[in-house]
Every structure is written in C-alpha cells, then in structure tokens.
Image (cartoon, rainbow, N blue to C red; front, top):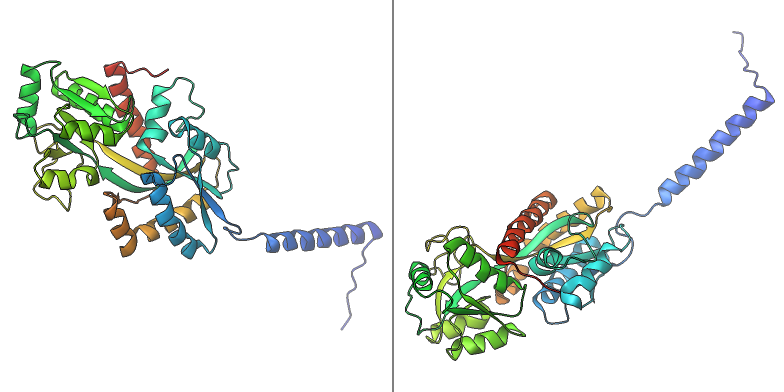
Length: 333
C-alpha cells in the first residue's frame, strides 16, 4: 500500500502552530476562570445595627455562607433615610459580590419623595428576590368610639380634621399608610410626625393620638392589656398570631393594604446567571425552619420567590405610592 504524505509549506505550518498555541492559552484561561462565588460577598444595609433590615441581613448572611461557600459580610452604610447605602450599592461593580437589602422606604418611597435622588430603583438595580414582609396593624386609642374599620371611617367622615394619626416622620411608610387610608376612604385626618415610632406609640397610649400604623411587636402586649385597640392588619392575609384580627380589606376597605417588604437587589448590569444563583440561595435559606422562626420573632414573615416577581412588586409599588404622594401633595426638601 502506498503511503500518502501531506506536504505543508512554512507559512501554513507557522499558522498551525500559532492556532494551537492560542487554543492552549485560551483553554488555560477558561480552565482558570473561578466559579461564582470565588470571594466573600457583602450585603449593604442602609440603616444602623439593630434595625429590622440589619437584623434580616444578619440572619440570612450566615445561612447564605453555608450554601455559597463564601463569607457574606454585612456592611452598614446609614444616612439620608437609606439613600447613602442604596447609592453605594448602585455604584458597586456588577459582579454579584455586592448586594443590598431594599425595603419599601429606601428603595421605593424615598426616590419618589426626593427630586434629586442619587439612584433610580428601576434603572440602577436588578432584583434578586424578595426576602420578607411585615404587615402593619391599625391601632387606635381605646377612647375612640370605633370598634372596627367601618366605624372608624364613619367617625372620620363625621369629624373631618379632628382625628389625628402619628408616624415616625414625613414620608415614612406609616405616614403614607395613613394617607392611603384617607385616599381610599374619602376621609381627612391630621398627620402628626414624630422622630420615631416609639414616641408615636407613647402618645397613642397617653390618648394624645387617635391612630397609629405600626408593626406588630410594639403593640401586641399593649393590645392584650387593653391599652390600645387593634382594628385590622394592613396585609393581604390574617396574621398567624392574631387569627381573629381581620385584614383591612375584610374590614371593608379594600385598596388600603400596606405591607413593609424587604428584598435583595444587585447593580443592574449583574449577569443573569449570577442573579439566578443568588435567587436559588435566597429561596433555600427562606425555607429553613430556624430562619422562619427568627423572622417571626421580629414580627415579619419569610417571603421569597423569583427575581421577576420581586421586580414586578417594586414597579407596582412605585406606581401605588407615587399616586399617594401626589394625592397628598407630600413634599420633602
């Protein structure tokens, strides 16, 4: 049998050698690309230690470490109602190593209130997953002659501008909850802003306030002692620990629902594969019994889901609260 010999010219041989070297080099680079995550992650919290957002981050961070194989560090960047921390997160490298816990106030309400917001919640962030939510309750002083929401609406209509409600400050979620109540019910009440929620509850107990929107923990024991009266939860479902307390829709005022939600976001250009990996981990952590128990102790509930679902929630909330702020003509300099 005759053997065939392939004759290769010097130029062709050189080209073949260069291609082979390139393939080896590229292959080596690909082989050396570390799988995500390859270094510690950080979660930026827009408020100081002890805040609800901070507590959530410190509960889920170690659990995410277990699944991701890398430390998850909580970084407190407080100031300007959450704007400093959100701006830092928006300007971070979009590589999946910097996350922020967005909540109703700093992620949605603040950018609507401040015309010079340093970030845009839709343009600058990509959703990872909702993490938790915590419905508020509508509490009144026992001297208020209203045993339910319908009676409170009737009383407010009969006494325009004579009932008052307190909040931790202008533009806060409890403030806007009161404005939403008025917008939906067609009533007018007087808003009294305080420096914090504790001060408002103190004045509610003392009879200086008619109404307060608040989370469950600060008023649960007070309600049992008869020092405040709870009329409804502002969530879409009854609270597990208060099954007899109706939702505000069940009590006759659909459209006035309010829930303080929390969720993880990353800079908008973060790769979708990285977001998917983080979403899977958040949902795994949310299913852990000890995480659910620790959240419950803080008066909040685990609420996870897809990145798309959280993105839709943020956009819907921007529309909802934008209408409330415009209707109430709320302005913050």
